[in-house]
Image 1 (cartoon, helix red, strand yellow):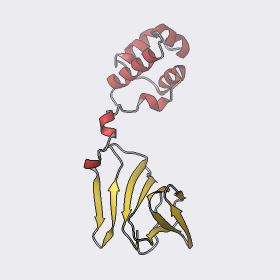
Image 2: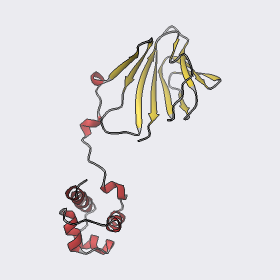
Image 3: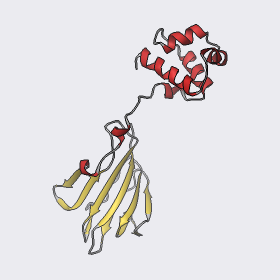
Image 4: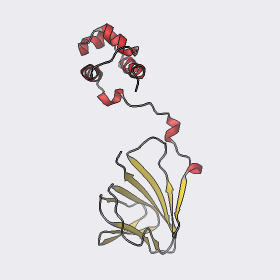
Length: 184
């Protein structure tokens, strides 16, 4: 992030807090001229100065460095979903529902599991945590060596490194919504 962008952030937060430069100066111990220079993108603020500014405005230090995100980039239209079929397994359809090109700490998937099939032949595990919700139908969740039946509206939390799979033992498609944590 360049100094100009950082300066605009400081100015924006100060204005939202309805603080004058003089009031911010009193709260931070930084001179009004230094704050003015920072807001205009002039100078190279120290970490201590940035911490003082963030603290005085009641925001985290990281808030000064977060990039602005256009709301439209956070929306994924149904028509834009990525649909993936496992080439060897035509019984399962993965719909990627996570919008945006920016990194996210979460991934969202809609899985459609056809009748009398399962997500994987073997139990699989991830280093991330997952939460699954049965949107339609009835699923058998196999976690490690334990099996449990889940009904429409039920959710299950799958801890990292826990081997699991889902089975559809019925004549109807089932829909399972998955939320997976992601390490950035």
